[in-house]
Length: 143
Image 1 (tube, rainbow, N blue to C red):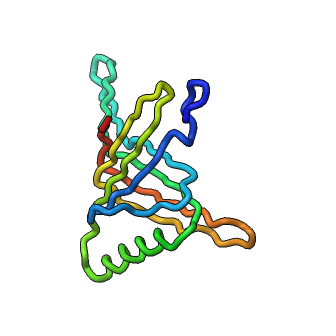
Image 2 (cartoon, rainbow, N blue to C red):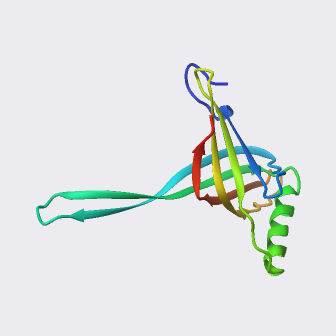
């Protein structure tokens, strides 16, 4: 729910769709960040004019959640077991849905995603914060 015309953290939801069509259960999501990856090149002509080129190279993202089950541990254990068994890792998809301050809904789909995982730090009297980071080949606007 936007407040006073501003987007806030509650305005976004994130769903990871597995290659099987099911969803990866994310426990208490506390943050989501996605950034485009680009490389840039400068071309300087003999006339001294510089042309700048940009190449789109996908997206990086981070999802933080508080551990409430073994769902992420189980998923990444399966990925590791598949690797050692010689099975190819299949890509996942992320669906980001944003409720805009004007009431509209914006949706983005991140395609061909692969993940890394930080299972978190276990400390006395503290929750365990887990982080999924990764890369996507591209982001496509759905709505």
